[in-house]
Image (cartoon, rainbow, N blue to C red):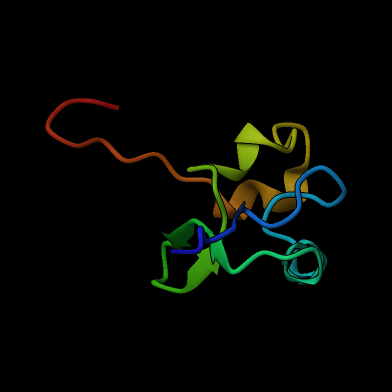
Amino acid sequence: SKSAVLAHRGFPGKYPEHAIDGFKEAFDNGADMLEIDIQSTKDNVLMVFHDEYLDDIVDLKDKIEFDKYRSTEIIEGVK
């Protein structure tokens, strides 16, 4: 039986993870399938994104234009 080639998040050696161009490159280079991460936004829109928070990959703390999107929830006394 033939082994399948799985592209993990696209072609991250050349493109950012989960980039469409990375997906295309992976298939162009012999990938049979992709492994991707899907997250749901606060308003229930699905998106392909690995990290739980955008802050994990982009420094947003000093960008005031994103302030309206910040939120903190307290669940059972834990912030």
